[in-house]
Image 1 (cartoon, rainbow, N blue to C red):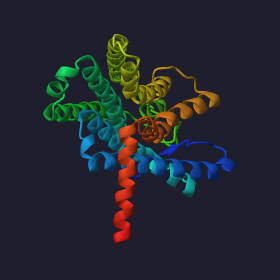
Image 2: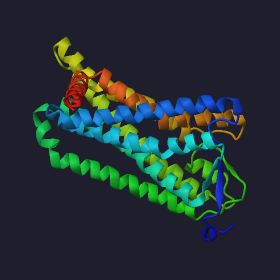
Image 3: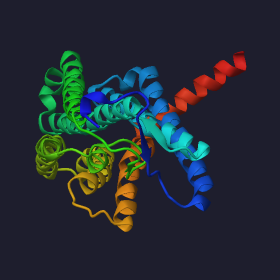
Image 4: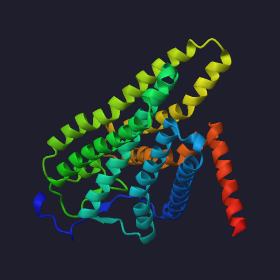
Length: 317
């Protein structure tokens, strides 16, 4: 089937989260719960930051942007997976598959770039505190977020266009619960060498360059913190970075496992790959609000004030 002759009637089959019928009900409830908590938790972060003027700083601006990206990132895959489990129909149209792929890559890469941006923000705050307000001014913060969106859209369009050029066989099952680059290339009937090279170099660069920038930033941060004379000052500086480091370790650890570590086509390997993908597409966005709010006194205070103001408003009604 030629790449340019796809029709709206052409559909892919998705392997799903599990091929065991007895697990479907549990998986539906589990993923529904995780999705609701993810959306609610990240939305609360955005609302708390927006409602509290004391949190209108670059660090919390980037955190709110990350929460928005996480909501969209999870929404790209989980609702479709829930519908597939509920209806027991695991098909997705060709157009729907490429649309899901584009938005999945956009919001997933946005998470990566925002985590790197947040690391740079902490680097400036701790290593150059006297120049922080000048370097991280409002215009620069807006520019950095726009640059992140521009880069992610460019990367997503590149990969999606290359997938569009491929031919696909009928009745092929994508070994995943959504449309992703690797699984799509596995079910292609045409030569995927160009796609694999672009995925290796461009995809590898998107993951490894931000990761290395984060690593360099935190080496500088740790070096600067260790030079702080007071123990209390060192602990305070470490506390501002602890939440971000936890998210970075969880997100990049699972992304690198899913994309940069080779896997075989065996059923055990497919289960492991699916578990790794679930970790960074579902679990990490779920944990982010808890990590950032539980380890941050300002966020906890903002959330308490948000709840109090909401209750006061509801009582007034």
